[in-house]
Structure formats: structure tokens, C-alpha cells
Image (cartoon, rainbow over all chains, first blue to last red; front, side, top):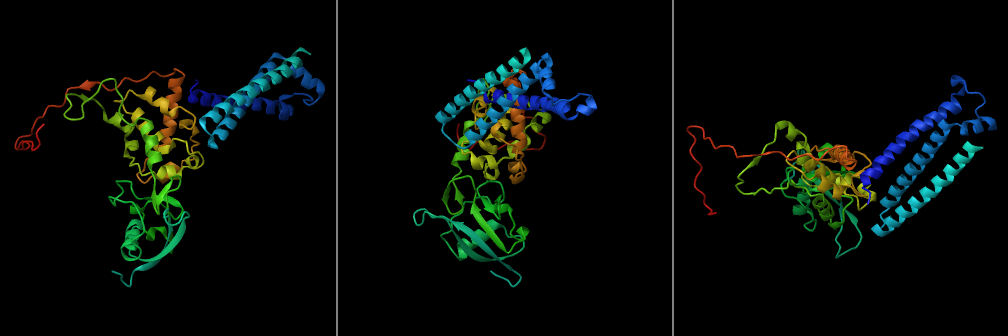
Length: 116
Length: 276
């Protein structure tokens, strides 16, 4: 069984990743005039960004970090509601399964955009 | 005896007598208050002069035993350390400590806290065992090493920190600031080698990572202990160990006991009155 401190430290690490990657997102989407990105919201721009290796990594990391951070936080909130140990185990399994499915689905979209 | 200089203060005391009424109710008493009178003194005055059925728990009356924790005017405090006039209110509301089952009136059942305290193994863990009576060896500890944990050892197990904790209020399984603070106190002790063993108790769901760092425990502690700090230091220690980034420390070395060098002029201790 994985120690809670490991899960929790990954939760913090995922939070830091999100702060950095959302920073990249804000930089591209909202500071486009400063950095000289042209027409960031057009379909062609979105498509061209998705085709670069850099964004493949950024989107994948952001997807994984956001899913893990969100679901671990949700797990803690549910646990604090005071259910029994057996229900907590079921919640953990459901959230783990939901997280894996969400990640695979999101990653599929990222890879499809990359190979278009 | 009342004097004309006494200030009359209205005490609203929460009562709970399970065998008479399953619900709690408030009872009011007017108490003549002098400068320096504590809430515990006032409650004892009520018990002596107005209502002998009022139940309270107390012992030392000087902030040592940790028996008289109560919820006084919206804050958990020790009744023996809270002066009535310092509350600056004509009405003093006294309730039992929150986050505990109530046994009767102002007496909370502290067993849930004490069981959690025991669960974190609050003692020095070493592979060797030391006899408690007349040990043949001592463990070396420098003043700097004592500084690492000394403030956490001032805990008197009054339970005030747990009643102030918002996480303990919502999550009954949460180990709580008292137990977690004591887990750090022993893990930070240079004589201890039990960090790994103690981690099994604190590194769980409802354990140390569930502390949301509200800091209410540290603010409420009547002994000036900072359990919130202890929990954060414990998190750091356990996380580093769990990822293998820090090795487990070796307990302080054993030393022969200090020689008994009596200063000249001091007579030897009298012979034992109890045989070994």
C-alpha cells in the first residue's frame, strides 16, 4: 500500500506543475502582444501549437497534474465526511479508475491533435 | 464573602445531565467577582453557594494538570488560567470543550484524544531497553538537541488544541494536533530511533497530511506549544523518509552515568527507607 505522505507530496508537486503550466498558458493566451504571438485564438494557431512537441509535453503534463491534483483533493474531502474504511477504499478505487480513464481520453485527444 | 466592590457577572453555564434530560440546556448564575478571580474559582463558588449539582473537572488550579479545559466566551481555554474580568464582559458563557463527547455538564470525555495520543507511540523507541529505576547508563543529549523538541514537551494533554481544530471538528477520525504534535516531539528527540515505527501511525489518511494548517491549535494552547509547527515539521520528516531522501537517525550514544562527586560539606543522602 502506498504511503499517504507519498500521495500527498505528489499532490503538492502536481499543484506546483499546474502553477507553472497555467503560467505558460497565460503567457501564450493573454500576453500574446508582449511575446509577439499572432492571433492565438484562431483555429490554425491552436492546431499548429498542438502539433509541436513542446505543447504535446505541456498539455500532457497539465492534464496529468490537474487530474491527479483534483481527484486527490476530492478524495480528501470525501474522506473528511467521515465514512468507514471500507467505503474509503471503494472511493479510492473509483477515483483511481476515473482518473486513469480521464487521462487516457485526454491523452488520446492530445495525440490526435499532434498527428493531424 | 461578598463586598460592595465586587462586580456581579452573569454566568451562562451549559448543563447536560444524561439521566435527567437527553438535551443540553443553559442555566444562569450571578457571581460576585473580585479582581483576580478565575472562571474556575467562579464555578466552584457557584457549586458551593448556588448549585451543588454543577459538575466540573479540575485538579491543580494552576495550569499544570490540564483538567479544566472549557469553552469560555467562544474560545477553548483553561478555566483556572482565565480571569473573569479579563474577559471584559458582563456575561460569561461556559460550555464543555467542543469536539469531544460530553460526560456531564462541563466534563468532556477526553478518551478519544488519549487513545490517539497512545496510537502515535509517545515514548522513546530504541532497539535497546533502558531500566526505569537506577539505569546503569545514560543517553547523551546536548542543549541544542533538547531545543529541537523542548517546547512540544510542555503539552499537558488538556485537549484544548483539539477542541480549537477545525479539522477535528469535521473529521472525527483525524489524529488531531495533540497526538501529531507529540509524534513530532518524540521523533525530534535525539535519543529516539522510532521515526519509521511512528510513521505507521501518522502516515495514513486522517493522519498528519489532513492538517490544513489553520493554526487554531497553536493559538489556543494554554502552554504556548505550537502543535501546528510540529505537524509541519513532522510532515517534512516523514515525506523525506518515505521517498528515501533522508536516512533514519541513530539514537544518542550511551554513556556511563555521571560520577557522584559530592561537594565538600554536603552530607550524604539518608539511607533508603524502602528496601529494593
